[in-house]
Image 1 (tube, rainbow, N blue to C red):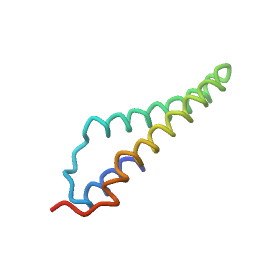
Image 2: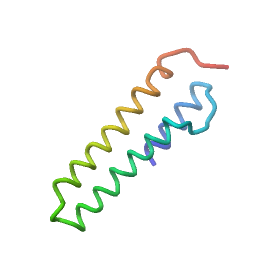
Image 3: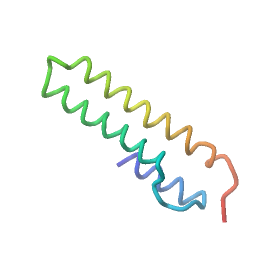
Image 4: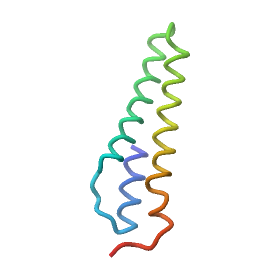
Length: 80
């Protein structure tokens, strides 16, 4: 939810179309991988280390990707 709100607010406040492009869908996919890997780590403790590492990588990809994709629009002039 946090990622969805961040992308929607960023697009809205910068005057861009509020649609999810391919890059945004990849960010959401990375976040889903992080969530499901973290949940699976609790259920499958024998794979816990790998699943937790996968979750961490997914989280970093999602939020670092957000910063790379949406950061420049936050520091530029609003589109009209």
